[in-house]
Length: 419
Image 1: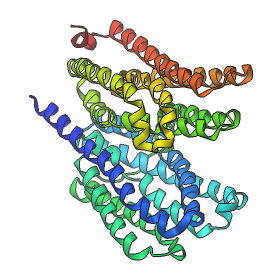
Image 2 (image 1 turned 180 degrees about the vertical axis):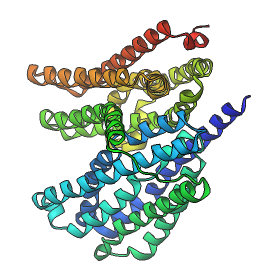
Image 3 (image 1 turned 30 degrees about the vertical axis):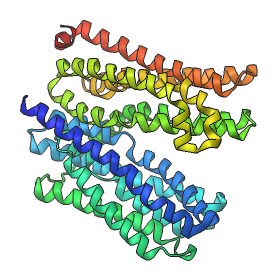
Image 4 (image 1 turned 135 degrees about the horizontal axis):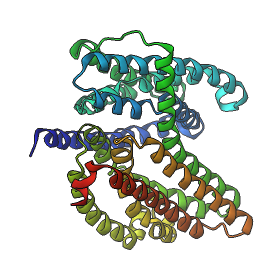
């Protein structure tokens, strides 16, 4: 095994460790916070946390994906790494200011935020630390161990202090403060590694270079945002047109299960992306598709066959009646693995970012138009939405297969895949 593939294997393991940690820490703190704060006070945290999720998407703005590719392409040129890092730091800094202005403008008009301005401000500070992490440097240099290590350490500190300091509803502000502390620890640790250990210097960047970086990041942002938009719109449409709360709950739980399993694909795609940018290792890609599709095929069938067990585990006995939803959306798992593998690790890695964005945008439009057709035709049921969700994933996969095949037909570096 080559050193590059060994590094890829190590990064995959670290990324899986990160995924496990991201599920583990909320599992530890969530039951405690809900009981200590109570339903009414915890609702403040839940709502503002959702608002901060949108702010984080805005602040990232595709910079992480763009930066990873840019750093991977110049990984042996320290001066160029400094330039790319500086460009993203400045762009993110500008968006932090824009985000603060937008948040200040919106907060007075949202009751729960207007009543808790201190919580909003502290939570936004934490999101700013998280959004300005230099993860694109570590990913581009294929050294992702620090991301997992710093997450585990920072979350351990925040979790221990949560049990010490949050004892009743009056301690609500400690929650965003401790979450912000975890983000600050990660921020300080990461930038110390970038600036002191790796000796990457922050340099001046001209306005033209900043504008170019913003335009390039916008393409990545649109690709990532398309999926978020149609997912959120689906939930909204179901809530409007389906009056049975149980059916709405069935959909929510089923999609939670789908998302959880899809997160198992993410360590592979995150680690493969910079590897492919540097090496165009299509022979490895082919192997991952063959072996992965065999495993995903078995897993998707098992997921459908055990749908009642899945619903029982996630929702309890009262949710078993919705097991048909899990079975109906199980093909999403089969379509999404190759779609994700052909996305950033292939299309973005070989410079076909616009084609990647087109595949995401067209599939999102297909889904939105499908929802509109079902809604206005009076056919919007959970079963029909499940079928539409599977078709949407198939459309995305089909478009990405088409673009990858066209690329291979026009370039010689795809011959290793075709052999």
